[in-house]
Each structure stands twice: as structure tokens, then as C-alpha cells.
Amino acid sequence: MKFIARVLWAAWLALAVGGAWAQAAITMASTTSTEQSGLFAHLLPAFRQATGIEVKVVAVGTGQAIDMARRGDADVLFVHDQPAEEKFVADGFAARRYPVMYNDFVVVGPKADPAGVRGKDIVAALKKLSAGNAPFVSRGDKSGTHAAELRYWQLAGVTSKGSGYRECGCGMGPALNIAASSNAYVLADRGTWLGFRNRGELAILVEGDTRLFNQYGVMVVSPRKFPHVKALEAQKFVDWVTSPAGQASIAAYRIGGEQLFFPNAGR
Image 1 (cartoon, helix red, strand yellow):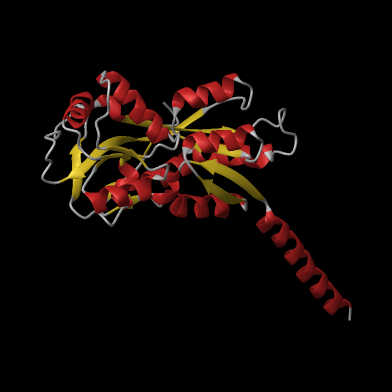
Image 2 (cartoon, rainbow, N blue to C red):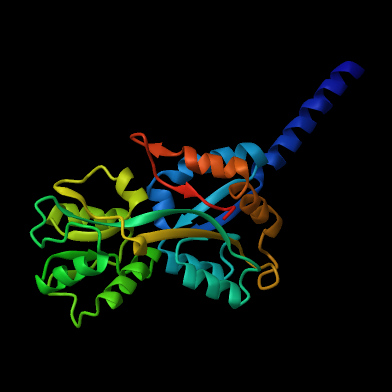
């Protein structure tokens, strides 16, 4: 009887500890590119295996993700709009911003390239799109990609984006779908493009401009602002994703042999 009791006790204890281990969870507000590219499906199981912490992702545009974190509705923030991220920290909503990885933006459009934008210069490309009233799909959702697009239009110095310019107010995947169905141009992050299958007649037309660099950052939402934030667990995610193990996991994610994101936490 004593032996059976010890066995039952050990089994109950294992279930209790295992259940507590599995139930630890944090909410992450993140950009759609990390989700739609498939990165999180690759990355988060490795983090859970290392720590026992589940990550519940809310994937929206970067602007919406930051707003969500500003309301205290997330424990950790993973986005790609450095000026907005730095303001988030300056306003006291996080103690520190950690660079974690990068890729780049590309202009995608019809392979025939009727607007003649093919090349390396993003500013020259936008000027041609404006002058030719070419169809262009803008995310228009205050995302990191949308913020970058607006900066490029400002650099182009055009008074009008052209009659073909349309805002969809949608994520990167839907914007690419609209561009594919209408043979339009669109600014996309390379990671989502590589994971996109419904390409139709679309191809990368503008790439390689240093201004198209796309940096991602990660932050723990301040427990001083929001005492309910799971700061310890969120910090474990930040520490892991910027560690050699997390950085190696990011580098290992590929589609068709091509690397989507490049870790740079140590730089």
C-alpha cells in the first residue's frame, strides 16, 4: 500500500509540476510579417521547449501592436519601426529596446514592369509610379511597412502618389493578394514575400537600396506602467531570442533554401 501511495503521489506531483510548466504563457503583440512569413511557427516551439513558456501572438500592423502594448494588453512587443519603438521606450512603456534581426523591403510588381521601375533606387521607382499613375497597393494600416513606405514617398518629394494609388488597410499577405489579382505594385518585406505563394505575375522589381533596410526590435512592456504584465516571463523571451540559441534559430529559418531573417542582436 505504501508503495502504491508513493507511486500515486509521484504521478500527481509530476502532473502538477508539468501542468504549471505548460501553463506559463505570455501575450506578444507583433507585426504581421513575423507571423505570415512563418517565422513564429518555427521559432516559438523552440522557445517553449527551452523554457516551458507559451507565447500567444497577436499579429497586427506595427502601429496597432504598439498601441496594444501602450494599453497594457501585451507582455512583450516584437515590431519593425525603429523611430516608433524608440518613442515607446522614451515614453516609459519599456525600459529598453533590443535589436533582434533584420531583412529588407522590396518593391514587387508585374513582371512586365509597365511603369519601368526595375532597378535598385526606391526613390526613382516611386517617382515613376507617381508620374505614370501606376496601380500601387499601400497597406495603409500604420504598420512598420506602411511607415517605411510613407518615408520613401516623402524622400521622393512628389505632390501626388498618382491616381493608381490605393490603401487597403490590411496586412502584408492580403496586400500581396490584392496586388497579385490586379497586377499592381506593392512595397513588401522580403520575408512575407518569400513565404507568399499566390504570386500570379508578380516579381521583385526593386531591391538592394540601403534605404530598404528593415530592422526588428523586441521590448518587454513596462510592469511599472502595468503591474499585471508578466515581465519575468517576457524578459525570458527577450533573453532567449537575443541569445546564441535564439539567434541561431532565426538564422536557420529558410524557405526554398533562402534565409528570411538575419539575426543581429549582438551588433
